[in-house]
Length: 262
Image 1 (cartoon, rainbow, N blue to C red):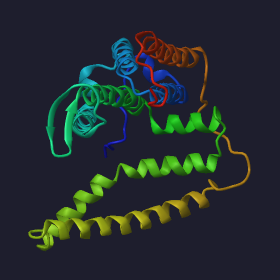
Image 2: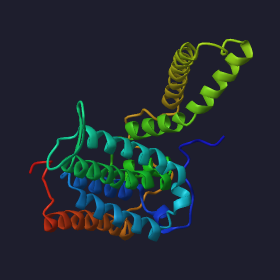
Image 3: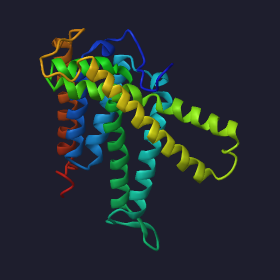
C-alpha cells in the first residue's frame, strides 16, 4: 500500500542530509521572512531557493502538482489583499469596500512571494524526508523524549491510511445503496465513521506499543544511528546565508519594515 506520506527517493545529496538539518534550515528561512512584509526580501529568498532546488536535484517534475495548491492559495491571498488591503498612494479601482491602490498592490505582491518563499523549503522537507529518519534525528540529535517522538511517528504513519479508509467507506455505502443522495449528509456520516475508526485504530496501536515496551521509562536504544556532520552544518549555513542576503537586499533597497512597521 502506497501512502501519501511516503517521500520520493533519489540519489541527490539532499536526500542523504539529516532531516534535523532540513527542518532547522526551513525554520531559519521562515523566521527571517516573517520579520518583514516587504517584497524585495521575499523575492530574493524565493530566487535563491529555486536555484538551490535545481542544484540539489529537486526538479519541476518532482515538485509538480504539489506546488499547485500553494500557488493557488498564494494567488487567492494576493487578490484578497489587493482588493481589501490598506490603501495608500494612487487608487486604480474602487467599488464598495474594495479599493485597489499602489499600497495594496505592493502588499499583495509581497504576500504572494512570501507565501511561496516560506512554503517551498517546507515542501522540499516534506518530499525528501522519510518519517522514520526524522524520528531518529529528533530522538538522537535533538534528544526529544522518545515516547513523544515514536508516538508522533506512529500517528504520522497512520495518517496516510485516511484516504484508503475514506474510499473503503464510500464504496461500502455505495454497495448498500446509501450514498446516492444527500452529499452533505453523506459527507457528515462518513466523517463521523472515519473518526470512530481512527479512535479505535489509535487505541489498538497504543496498546500494542505499550505491550512492546515503547512506553517504558528506561533509556531506549535506536536501530539506526542518526548522524549529524559537515553536510548538515553546510545546509544550515546555506539557509543562514539566504536569510541574510534577503534581509540585506531589503535594507539596501529601502523596503525593509520590521514586523510590518514603516
